[in-house]
Figure 1 (spheres, one colour):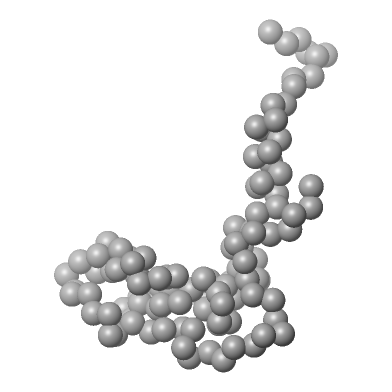
Figure 2: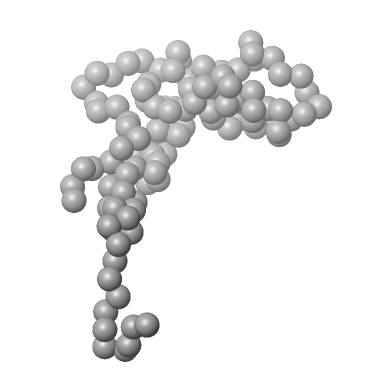
Length: 104
Protein backbone atom coordinates (compact mmCIF):
# COMPACT_ATOMS: atom_id res chain seq x y z
CA UNK A 1 0.00 0.00 0.00
CA UNK A 2 1.36 3.41 -0.90
CA UNK A 3 1.29 6.36 1.44
CA UNK A 4 0.56 9.98 0.69
CA UNK A 5 4.15 11.00 0.09
CA UNK A 6 5.17 7.96 -1.94
CA UNK A 7 4.63 8.35 -5.71
CA UNK A 8 3.17 5.42 -7.62
CA UNK A 9 5.32 3.75 -10.25
CA UNK A 10 4.13 3.53 -13.86
CA UNK A 11 4.53 0.30 -15.75
CA UNK A 12 6.22 0.08 -19.15
CA UNK A 13 2.90 -1.01 -20.65
CA UNK A 14 1.16 2.09 -19.28
CA UNK A 15 3.88 4.41 -20.63
CA UNK A 16 3.84 2.71 -24.05
CA UNK A 17 0.06 3.12 -24.21
CA UNK A 18 0.38 6.84 -23.46
CA UNK A 19 3.06 7.28 -26.14
CA UNK A 20 0.93 5.39 -28.65
CA UNK A 21 -2.13 7.52 -27.86
CA UNK A 22 -0.12 10.73 -28.23
CA UNK A 23 1.58 9.85 -31.54
CA UNK A 24 -1.10 7.94 -33.47
CA UNK A 25 -3.39 9.83 -35.85
CA UNK A 26 -6.95 8.98 -34.86
CA UNK A 27 -8.47 10.95 -37.73
CA UNK A 28 -9.57 14.09 -35.91
CA UNK A 29 -8.97 17.74 -36.78
CA UNK A 30 -8.81 19.41 -40.19
CA UNK A 31 -6.54 16.77 -41.75
CA UNK A 32 -8.86 14.04 -40.51
CA UNK A 33 -11.90 15.86 -41.90
CA UNK A 34 -10.41 15.91 -45.41
CA UNK A 35 -9.45 12.27 -44.97
CA UNK A 36 -12.93 11.18 -43.85
CA UNK A 37 -14.78 13.20 -46.49
CA UNK A 38 -12.77 11.71 -49.37
CA UNK A 39 -11.96 15.11 -50.86
CA UNK A 40 -8.38 14.10 -51.57
CA UNK A 41 -7.58 10.86 -53.36
CA UNK A 42 -5.60 8.61 -51.07
CA UNK A 43 -7.92 9.28 -48.17
CA UNK A 44 -9.65 6.48 -46.32
CA UNK A 45 -13.15 7.44 -47.47
CA UNK A 46 -13.69 5.83 -50.86
CA UNK A 47 -17.42 5.03 -51.12
CA UNK A 48 -20.40 7.23 -50.24
CA UNK A 49 -23.83 5.89 -49.33
CA UNK A 50 -26.45 7.26 -51.75
CA UNK A 51 -29.11 7.35 -49.01
CA UNK A 52 -27.43 9.04 -46.04
CA UNK A 53 -24.09 10.29 -47.50
CA UNK A 54 -21.98 8.38 -44.96
CA UNK A 55 -18.52 7.42 -46.25
CA UNK A 56 -16.73 4.08 -45.98
CA UNK A 57 -13.20 2.96 -46.91
CA UNK A 58 -14.16 -0.20 -48.80
CA UNK A 59 -17.07 -2.12 -50.30
CA UNK A 60 -17.36 -4.59 -47.42
CA UNK A 61 -17.66 -1.78 -44.84
CA UNK A 62 -20.28 -0.07 -46.97
CA UNK A 63 -22.27 -3.29 -47.20
CA UNK A 64 -22.13 -3.69 -43.41
CA UNK A 65 -23.30 -0.08 -43.01
CA UNK A 66 -26.13 -0.62 -45.48
CA UNK A 67 -27.33 -3.82 -43.81
CA UNK A 68 -27.32 -2.12 -40.39
CA UNK A 69 -28.82 1.25 -41.32
CA UNK A 70 -31.04 0.51 -44.34
CA UNK A 71 -32.26 -3.09 -43.90
CA UNK A 72 -35.50 -2.66 -45.89
CA UNK A 73 -33.76 -1.37 -49.03
CA UNK A 74 -31.76 -3.90 -51.10
CA UNK A 75 -28.01 -3.21 -51.41
CA UNK A 76 -27.01 -2.17 -54.93
CA UNK A 77 -23.31 -1.77 -55.59
CA UNK A 78 -23.92 0.24 -58.77
CA UNK A 79 -25.57 3.13 -56.87
CA UNK A 80 -22.52 3.80 -54.67
CA UNK A 81 -20.47 6.94 -55.34
CA UNK A 82 -16.72 6.35 -55.75
CA UNK A 83 -15.09 9.45 -54.26
CA UNK A 84 -11.61 8.53 -55.49
CA UNK A 85 -12.71 8.32 -59.12
CA UNK A 86 -14.26 11.79 -59.06
CA UNK A 87 -11.18 13.62 -57.68
CA UNK A 88 -7.87 14.23 -59.46
CA UNK A 89 -4.58 12.90 -58.10
CA UNK A 90 -2.21 15.52 -56.68
CA UNK A 91 1.20 14.00 -56.01
CA UNK A 92 2.79 17.07 -54.38
CA UNK A 93 0.57 16.78 -51.28
CA UNK A 94 1.31 14.25 -48.59
CA UNK A 95 -1.28 11.50 -48.45
CA UNK A 96 -3.17 11.10 -45.22
CA UNK A 97 -1.91 8.26 -43.09
CA UNK A 98 -3.05 6.27 -40.15
CA UNK A 99 0.11 6.88 -38.16
CA UNK A 100 0.90 10.37 -36.82
CA UNK A 101 4.30 11.60 -35.71
CA UNK A 102 6.95 9.26 -34.39
CA UNK A 103 8.31 11.68 -31.75
CA UNK A 104 8.80 10.19 -28.32
